[in-house]
Image (cartoon, rainbow, N blue to C red; front, top):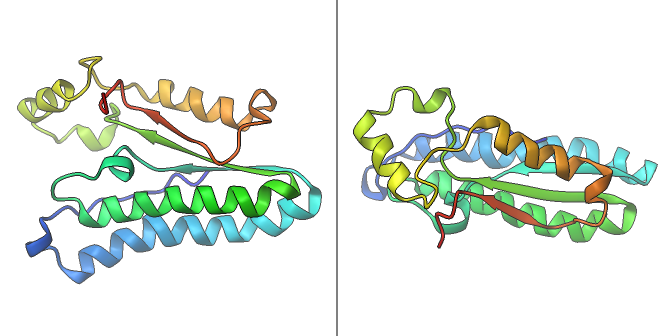
Length: 160
């Protein structure tokens, strides 16, 4: 599971190259490096699952997150490409695109901002980590043996 990710948010006009590069290095290059390290082994054994953490920001973009959006769009591109490359060798590659999840990173977000985030979701709440983990568990299981190259959005209906 390629799950590492960081944010260094700023509007386009204010974003530094260092901010941009840091997010790309972790969120995109990290996925590339880890996947490349296991792809040959999985291909040789004729089976394996690579799961990539993307984001709804990777599907729709978000104000002030040029670098993060680029990295998460890129992860979706990796997922689709690698599913085609590795699928014939028995390796499945899928991505999960969560919306707002109740994790430590949101603990510093002001309540007013959290309320605004919830308003963008038709469920009117944040996802719990266990809800997102269940999607990864399914995708890693034999129950998902025919699921390849898919991006699952788990956002409580944010895109509706």
